[in-house]
Amino acid sequence: MRSTKRQQQATVLRIFRKIHRSMGAVLFVFFFIVSITGLLLGWKKNSGGYLLPDSVQGTSKNLNEWLSIDSLHTIATTYFVDSIAPGASTKLERIDIRNEKGMVKFVFEYDFLGLQLDGVTGKILLVENRRSDFVENIHDGSIIDKYFGTGNIIKLIYTSVMGIALLLFTVTGFWLWYGPKRMRKQQQ
Image (cartoon, rainbow, N blue to C red; front, side):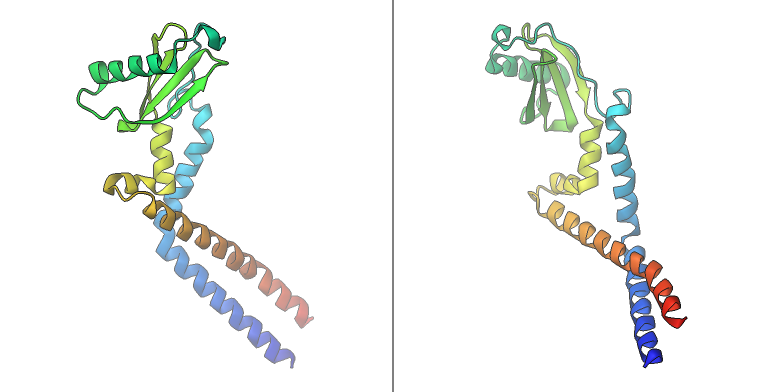
């Protein structure tokens, strides 16, 4: 009876080892990319403005003194087309209002660029190269969707595969660590 149970446990361990090794071999490159980009994203706010540009202080936190968002948007897109990327799309990824800093960020889809404007004067405070957005797009696989114009389908497949693989690695890794300990205890 004991040897049959031990054989079953050994079979389960062999199966888990095979799953763990096979998934590791197949997904090595993807796990490497996810780990490096995850590290970079964790450090983005502490990169001295290299990965995530620092927010510049505007003149006033009082929104009543600010230009309208429409006026600020016009200033941002005009500057973008005239001084940064003539002929490029002015499609925005997002508008980030930082009233506590007295400024607003206009983040363009084109080339991960953004502009920080003073909310009161409309003055361009900073032209941002948003490297962290690029890293994030690599991290979650959406860079491929952007390149091929496939919506979010590749990102969904990629994150699902990577999430399930990480879950399976966790379960099989735990069992590869715990299983032999359990078998030794039962042998005593």
